[in-house]
View 1: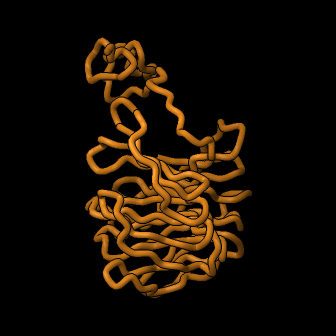
View 2 (view 1 turned 120 degrees about the vertical axis):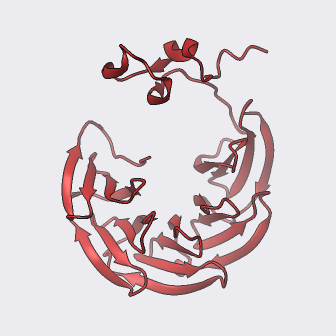
Length: 263
């Protein structure tokens, strides 16, 4: 079967990729982005896909849908492999531990589940007053993780004992996103109250509050060394902060609708 639709690490595939103008003279495939549609596949049911993630190694793609079902896809042919019931309500989030030994998922009913890499259930927890849990993130050591939800709280958990250690309160509305710092004991959260907060999970205190957005903060993301913080919002803006000085570096404009994802 022809492999023309699948991009390969070879210079002949540059024509299928878009590149910044600065790299046209000396193109580097690793710095380009895909502009050619590789594949389209459709699940057996037509329910919306709420979250997705590659399995460790990238051989399979895992999706979670509105009905609370896992669907497993082949990462090369994108053929359907498996569908199974995972949650009683709609998926909201899935996150792998840094060592890729466990998967954590959450749903719209305040339920969180631990899964092994073979997608076997390990443990489940109920929290956030049975309200939707929108985001999950692991500490750098994988010994703790954090969750946030529509009860306006951020909660810190111990992985080994499956217990809630601390409830971080301070947001005035639903908390839509949370991200643990890649190197330090700092948690960042974004909320429907338009604010971004930085927390000390050990003391349970607020370190700082950022007021840059004028609508719901939908996503927060650290860069690799944790010096910069990116935030996205329904005000159609992406903002970059330097947390060493707690100042906004820039505000990126260009989206015509809300920004819901960062990478």
